[in-house]
Amino acid sequence: MYGDPHGETGRRVNGGPRPAGKKQNPRPPLRDRAARGRPEQPAPAPAQGSAAAVPFAELLKRHRGRSGLTQQQLADFATLSVRAIRDLESGRVRRPRRESVGLLADALRLGDPERLQLHAAGGSPADHRGALFTLPAPPAPPGALVGREAELQVLLDQVTVHGHRLVSVVGISGIGKTHLVLEAARVLRARGRRVAWHSLAGDRPCCGAAPAADRGTGEPPTGATGLTDDIAGAIGESHELLVVDGDDAPGPGRVDVAALLRRCPNLSVVVTGLAPRHVPGERVLPLTPMAVPEEAPDHDHARLSEVASVALFLSHMRRSRPGFRLRQDNADAVVRLCRRLDGVPRALEYAAGWCLVYSPEVLLARAGRDAHLLSSPAGCACQNLLRSLARSVDVVAERHRHVLAEVADRPHWTVADIAHLVPDPAAALHALLIHGLVRPAGAHLPEQFTALELVRLLYA
Image (cartoon, rainbow, N blue to C red; front, side):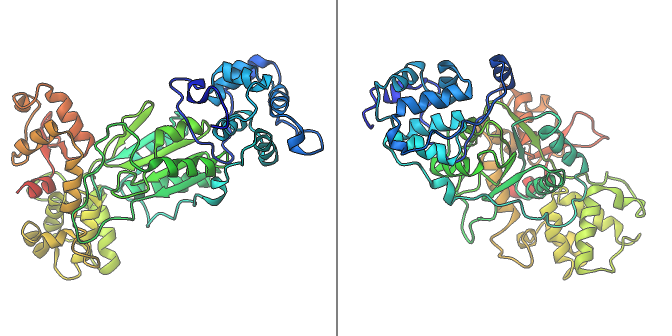
């Protein structure tokens, strides 16, 4: 406690204690800087001599005066009370808490030497955890992004044009969330934006059932505090955008995104996950299955490659069978296979891999019977799309899962058809669409919806 008489009571009720991270430098809003009538300048280092020779109260007043902040403004930016600032500057509190000193250093935008001097004057060591934690740059996308040009532009506009600080890209496992955000990160870095990367998506459990994901309660995930502190300290002002990939994956490594945004006011975050996070200011981009060919007695095989799911399937096919081409005799099997797999990118990738063993016609005939065909030919059979889909269903609210179970085996249905199942059928449909478990039945069936074929297989 270091003798601070205010302790937790000296904080604002809604601020909460927040450990200070290195180089976390909140910038006051433009309107506040304009109201002060002077440009913001970094505080010069104190006069020569031992830092301990300058009392904490004097050092704090010196930095505050040079930054042009009032006591009220410093209290606001540091999430402390005005009374706490007055007590510190009057010398009534001589050994403030290390956490409070870190928040003051952040609010005053002190550099490393000034931060260390302020900690030394307050009698507490500075927190160096941020220096030990670094955030990598995003890896390169795994090939060209096929069929997601519209979604990519929407995501870029959300971050750049509209300036939203939190964008959640949500959808079922295998829908292509990671590939989309990697491509967005590549584009933004090419434009000169500073982008950092934090991923849990690669840590999938093997040969066992995956634990249930967080159901989006809005509470900070268990064990998230320490990692969030490290990320906040590593970010400072060195990054404009952080991509958090697979933040609802089971296991350690979760990030408290809401706390991170509060502590790093210059930062925007893009998160991928199975469901929205339900935090203030969040913008949700649902990533739905790719377009599939409409039902028809025959198809023009020369134009089928313009359909997104077919184009992606062919791009994967040609990696293992470079000479494969759509022809009149195989076009129908490819169309039906893309429809059977709902245009889900990972399912199309797995199917194309198995086409080295089976023709599209044979694979189509076996796809509904052999669950291992929904796994990668080159990977472990436990990494199965149906297992992943089961987890995607598990994060949905129980009343909406009840609706999904009731309609899974119906070819198509309307909002009125589920009115007897829940008191808010439109909200239930909206939730299932956001999670990517149902889709519109097609232009030939307006205002009607259908469960994904993979969902039907799961329930079967």
